[in-house]
Image (cartoon, rainbow, N blue to C red; front, top):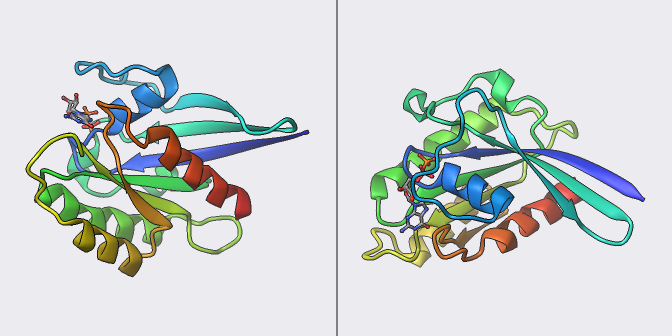
Length: 174
Ligand code: GDP
């Protein structure tokens, strides 16, 4: 049997749903008032992957540090993958994605030397109107080296397991 341990960063502008995502995924709940406890660095999810494989995911939420719009190298150290989120009803949060991706590419140093697998999540897809088209998100995702993008709703539990499983598959291949 084989065990994998992956450190996964969850980044993006404030209020896009990062903390809710981690809480939903790890605790299987959506609580609109949930905030991660200050001082907790990451949440752990144990994922039985196959008969012989177990995946342990450390999900690192930047918990309130979005105002810096960039993170220290320590935060990125030994990351295996990354989730960048934005809010489909907030074009400003979509523009923020580029800064987060640039910061990640400048500071993350994956062991193999290649790019860090990074998925783009278009969150709050249950709300309308969207300020972005699916075409513009698709084009942006391709042009900026994401492994792909998915529309998610943490509130409605849409594409949460699917998107993280997709990222896990890519991390297992790198
Ligand atoms: P963070 O600052 O990125 O960690 O964002 P939070 O997780 O604190 O979420 C910000 C707000 O958006 C909270 O009020 C959440 O309940 C709400 N929220 C998060 N995800 C969704 C979603 O998919 N749909 C809707 N409608 N609201 C969401």
